[in-house]
Length: 325
Image (cartoon, rainbow, N blue to C red):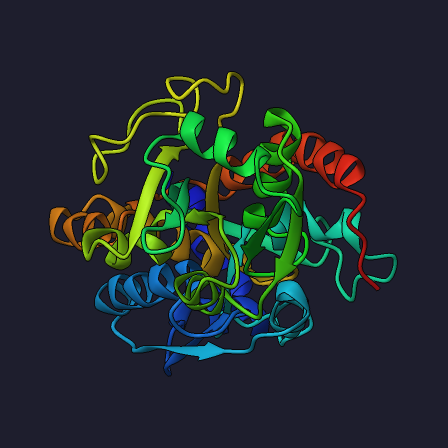
């Protein structure tokens, strides 16, 4: 037994003498950067800032949020994918950057399956069908469909960008209900809501966190949520099935990612910190106030979620005709 202990001790010392693993053992030694590939104020940005607080408290280093919007999330995500794989650059990767954009872009500047490692799922929320209370009289989804079909030129619906869950869900709603809808993309979720409040567009199937403040203020009216069950923050709002549109269960989710090649011990430390943060009642409460649920998973569970949803989003991209270059 003495010999065995000596051998193991020597092997362990040799293992951590490797420069990369030695650095991983002392990680983190400086603040981390969490890249949000969207403008401030949207659903991903809101979730990322809560995650940054939760991670910082558990890693003993501050986590600085950096917004790098543009290209439907591709610019910021590519920056993460091509960053040094040392654990100091993280990405707040929404579902579209992990499971949709590869079907939209012919020359995507990153490969979500090869260039990024999901550390943990981070957040999830349904979408909510919202209309501007001042400009649209409908109070239920069926009333809206009937009203929209009477509009000579149809209706316009907005989104935070082409190919986002908001866009594709709006396309699916129009197709499933027979509404003549014209898509109007904006630079972000908050801009789309501003356009709707002005009366420029009549509908958004939006992320709950983005719409929640205006829903509570009465400026927007919620007609249905896209979760399979009613959402705790909007208990009086029916699901799509309850509102008369079956088989329409979609959620907007995201994960924390790192560049491929990040040392496994760092990935595991981050994943453990994410799981601990998601289990914290105080952080759960802060997420709930934004209409979002905090998630913490293993890297394998996060990767499996993206793989499972890719076929669904690929088909939605195909039927919508959306494409970006």
